[in-house]
Image (cartoon, rainbow, N blue to C red; front, side, top):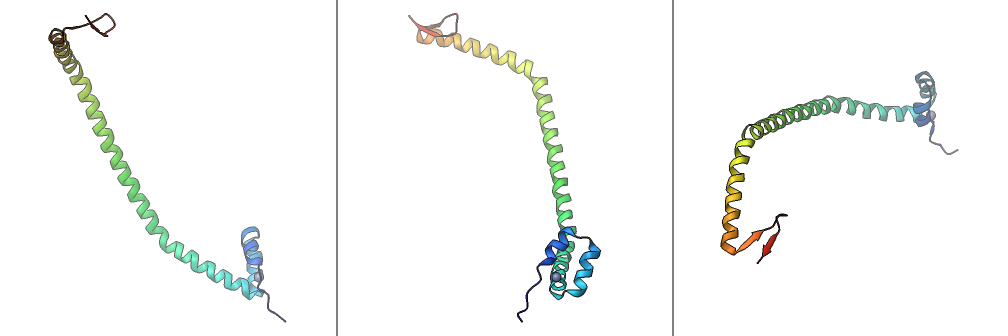
Length: 120
Ligand SMILES: [Zn+2]
């Protein structure tokens, strides 16, 4: 008589109640071995899990720090932009318009009403 390995464990584990599984484990050695394997794995998971959660929490914390830094930088830049923008804009506008006027004189070109260069 050839010994046939019981394959019920997985389905019992997945679909049956704990009592049913235990009852079967009492009379089936194959499934007891499977259960032991599962216990080893879940032990490993239990050992790994706190480390995993610790790591996860750390990465969340550093993500928060990165967010705060980013928001701080962004708000600072935005604030600087709004505070400085009118001043920078008016001065650079004056500079660029005077330089374009001198360019027109230098190359003998003129800008038409649409801002396109027309050569005489
Ligand atoms: Zn079994």
